[in-house]
Structure formats: C-alpha cells, structure tokens
Length: 268
Length: 264
Image (cartoon, rainbow over the protein chains, first blue to last red):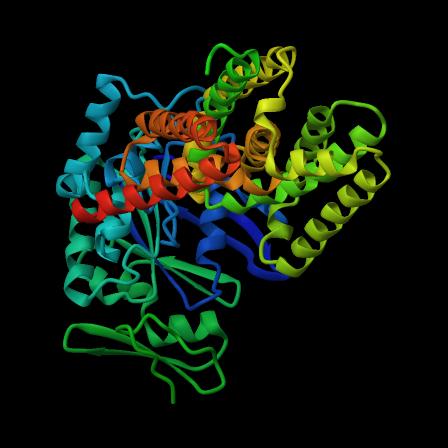
C-alpha cells in the first residue's frame, strides 16, 4: 500500500482560543484531487497551516509523504487566500520569481535556469501575458493565476490551494478548476483545493474532505455528500439536494449555515 | 565650489547617504512601511539630543536610539500595526524629550536647527569614516538578506510556509532603516528624512523597475536629489534641505507623469 500524500492522526488545532479541528484523522492517497469543503471558520486554512508546519497542533500529528518535514522543506506548493497585493507596482514576473529559492540568503538575482523555471511556471498557467504587467493592474482572476504559478515553483509534489476560486465568476471558476486539474494529472500532483462551492469541482475531484464542527469526513462525493453523512458530521439535520447536476447543502435553521451550495447560502 | 573642504565633505556625505537610502528606501516603500522612517527619525531626535547633552556625537545618539527602536518595532510589528494613537503619542514624546535635552544645551538653538533641518555643510571630514563604514555595512547586510526579504515582503504567507523567518527579517530590516535614517538625518535633518529615503524609492517603483535595477535607480535618484540640492544651495544661498525636499517632490511627480504616459 502506498504511503499517503498527507496523513493526519487525532489532529487538534485551535485558532483564536477556539478548537477548529478536534481529533481529526484522515489519509489522502497520493495523486488524488481533493476538495476541502466547509463553511467560514470550519478550519480549512488552519488545516493547511498545520500541514505546512505553521501551526503547532495541540494534539496529534500530520505527516507529509509519511514524514514530519521541517518547516519550509516539504515538497508542497502553497497558494494562500488572496489578500491585498503588496507588490502592486512590481510586474507579474517579479512577483512570481520572488518565491523561487526565496528562503536562500543573497541578492534577488536570477540565473538563466531560474528565469526559465519562472517562465515555465507562467506558461503552465497560461499567464505569459501577465508577466510584464504591474500586479496592481490585474484582475482578481489574473492575480490568482500568478499565485498558482508561484505555487508550482520548486517542483512540488503536493499543492495546497486555499480558496483559489474566490472572487472569480462562475465561468472562470470552471476554467481555473480545469487548469489545475490538468496540471495535477500531467504532473502527478496531489491537490487539496479548499472552496465554499463544490459545484465548479464536480467531475474533477476524486475525494471530498468535509470539515464541520471540528470534525472531518473524507470520502468520494457519493459517500460524503449525502444527507445522512453530513447530518452525522454536523450533529444536526442537514439535507443534500441534487438538482440539475448540481449539489446544494441545506442546513436546518438550528445548524450552521452551509456554504458549499452554488455560491449562495440556503437556510430554512 | 569644490575648492572648499566643507563642500567636498558634503558631497561625499551626500553620496554615502544616497547609497544607503536608495536600496533601503526601495524595500521600505515596497513593504508599505514608509512611515517607519519618519517615526524612527523622531525617536532618533530624542537620542541625538540626549547624546549632545552628555557630550557625545549626535550621530551616535541618533543611530543607537533609531536602531533600538527599529528592532523594537520589528519585534512588536503585529501589535503596533493599527495603533495610530499610541504611535502618535510615542513620537510626540520622543520629540518632547529631544526638545528638553536641547533646552539644557547652551547652544540649543543652533543644535536644534541642525538636527531638525540638517546641517550638511557642517559635517566634519572625520565623520566621513563613520558614515562610510555605516554605509558599507548597511548595504552589505541588506544585500545578504534581500532575497528572503523580497519574498517576505511580497508574499508573507507563502514565505513563512517556505521556512522564511518573518520576525527575524522584520527586526533586521528595521534596524537597517534606523541606521539609514540616522545617516539621512545628517543631510536633510529629522523632519525631512522622508524626502531622501522615500521619494526616490517611490519614484523608482512607480517607474516599474524590478528589484535590482529598482534599487539602483532609487540610489541614482537619491544622489541626484542630494547633489542637486547641494549645487542649488551653493548657487542660491538657500538651505540644501529645502532644495532636496523640492527635488524629491519633482522627481516623484515626474515619475508619476512618466508612469501615467506609459499607461501604468
């Protein structure tokens, strides 16, 4: 049996004094494309930070390819949630290139091979035309492409993508998901893809990792996205509605409002 | 103009200040910390006043207090951001302490003017050795840390995930800003540090240069301002600080115009 790409055992993580992950265990098979779902504050970003070694678990462990790597040494490309771009006045090429061996002391001087690697990453996400444009002039979707290119540097075997569809319109969501899926298949990458909306990922994901109330449920779409499974996870009545090839999760008024339902919130 | 030793000294001192202010200012503007140079110059004023009171060189007091304060800001960066009232009070207190120290000096008026508005023509030739050593040390340190600093400045989350120590870089960089501020204050005075530290760097970034050329252009623009200010001061008999401040504004406005024409 192959070593899991990412494995968590009894993992507990707190954020802001609140336990967001409570004794969570799962094992992600290598090469799989996993949608990490959950509402705001469900612990998606905390999980990613724990995998990256940026948050120390209160309890349990998380391993990457069966090992506990030191911070910054794991073969993981990370795309954080898009925040204000500090590099507004630099162009796209320099923003991406800054991540190439960015932890090494010295001058930000790029050899021919380093330049080729940056160009290849830009080409992989079809962002060559963004290379010479100031970052501040780019749209949200264009900036996301640069961040994705940055995550591909240094030949990662695992990608952690935190809300890569945020601020994109539905057509761009589907296009971005396909681009990431194709890249992952082509390079044999394991992808953890956090999102509020499962529908742009339909047909692409191998597994769903659903986070709610500090707990996690990992399985195929058909295993996880069911009324009994999610009701058990939430500990409250939750209904999963399939309509026109799309999934809607509808929470009871007493439970948290869920967000994995076609961008909008549906409560009753 | 170059027949006088004080003018030759002033040109060398201006070169050294620009050599440091260009690249340090470039990172300062990139990181959105322009205000830090202004804050550290205020704190440095108190240190310089105290040093003069105790018979020590103003540069020593200025430098020490600015570097220590810079490192403190770096260590407390998360807690300082957004606390504008507290920052304002600390800066006012620093200026007040500086004013108190100068009050007890017999030559307080001249010293206060020199500290606040600069006295580039009064720099002793022997000070150039100190300024030179500080400039080289500062630029070498910045060069060594510039790659991770650039990464941390642009993408702090990703940089941290890749093992970059953000806190260490914050502390080291703001210590360098403290040194650069101390050097710059010798030329422009406490109140006009912004003009030599921030204006050339902001203009360089506005013009869209990458990191290495950007720092070089920031240095060239800072040198243009500093030497231009000296020349105009010589010709007009107005203070060099005034001309440097004016040239700083002109340079930034021109860079904005060029960027606008290029559609940036």
